[in-house]
Image (tube, rainbow, N blue to C red):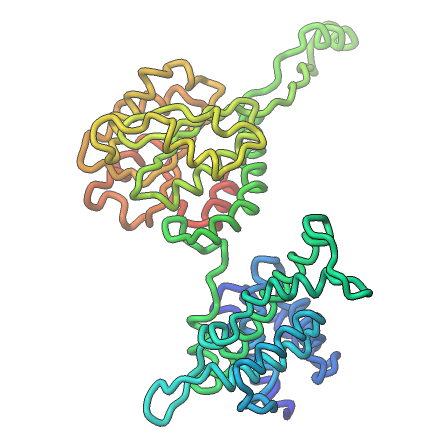
Length: 454
């Protein structure tokens, strides 16, 4: 490839990274150009590593980088060099052999041949398209697990190894990894073919998953929520540290009268310098109120994750869930508790429905204040998580005002866009007059909220 063509391709690649949320500054782009000049362009793995080192600053950006790299710098141009007339049976037998041997290069070549043979569909007259599900359905690689397990456990003498032990666990994990790798190869090959037909920009729009930080809680899928757990833990630690810092900055340490008087003896009894008792560090106290109604199901799952993470960072955490009434669920979030089990137990054990099971913030707040009047105090930080949609019922503004005045800090995290606050049955704008309400639709916005707590 000519130097001008390579630079244009690299420029398009960097522009695509920015478009899909991966920040790449001008200086980093220049670093990428220098990195490309320092590696062998025939070494595709080396090129990927060099560009990643120049352009990827966080692990969360790597999936988008890899997807776009495969589109802008494909492993090959055109179709596979293997015979596309291979039968599904022959391809399947070849797949078994390559998976058994762990031949990554052979698997990549086979992925191209399988797409040639099984993945083509006549999308419209005179135009072909490719689909990975047709390839995977034709080969059915998951059904090879039993044969692969027997082959991997077979000893040098040809006898089958012992089942049920550590060797079998390792073999099963190896098989899962190799099958997942081959599936990814097929999907990448199909994506490459479609990009050649329709252009990389069009394919990139649908192929690059949104960054985890930008996934909205209300629309998050199960896999995305599971990935969020790894991000929530450090944010919980930072939130606890910020609230603790605000507590320390709020009051000066108590005066140490004896040390102050003793020091004043050297200045004729005039206390020019005052001494204070050292502050004993401690974790702040926290009360969390979580809306777990169906309208915020995705956000409710996240709030429970956040509650579980915060449980380990505060000296005293009281967790309460509500729909149209409120109940305490602190016991379900003991250190080491399984989150999925806690969510299931909330639905079974917590008393959250009083009338009809539709959100009723006013009654929930009143029930909380009536049943647990001692929970909110001058040492407590109050955190409310919900969309503030009341089904046109009494929002309980007066009750919320009393809770906010009693707490040391009070914040409300709302998963709806700010433009929707106050629309329909939303009482968010009314609540915002008595409590600091924060738009919190994504992990990124949660991080911004934590950083603002100074």
